Length: 118
Image (tube, rainbow, N blue to C red):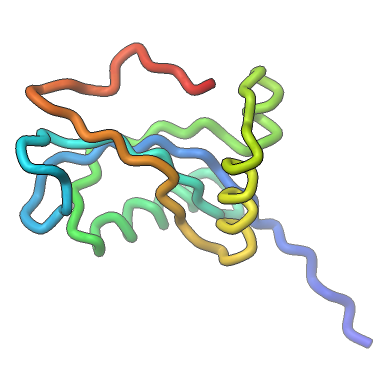
């Protein structure tokens, strides 16, 4: 019998700011957006690289990535993680994928400033 190899993959929560690009799918008048993403990787650097590559393939213009760590790291910082979020994280892990959980468009030069995750 073969022993099943234990995956070293973990899911990382990332916030990615994107700018405008033709065909990006953002609403008319938006100057960019923030995407909350769950991405699998053996470490956060791999999760970031995979996320940026996929976003570029999807005709978006990633500008900045902020990592919030794994679910355990977020819990240690006191973040409340609802069941829906946990389900998306599990899906990202099961599928070894990048999942956009939320998209917040920016208008008139708004940016992701002073906002924290809860």
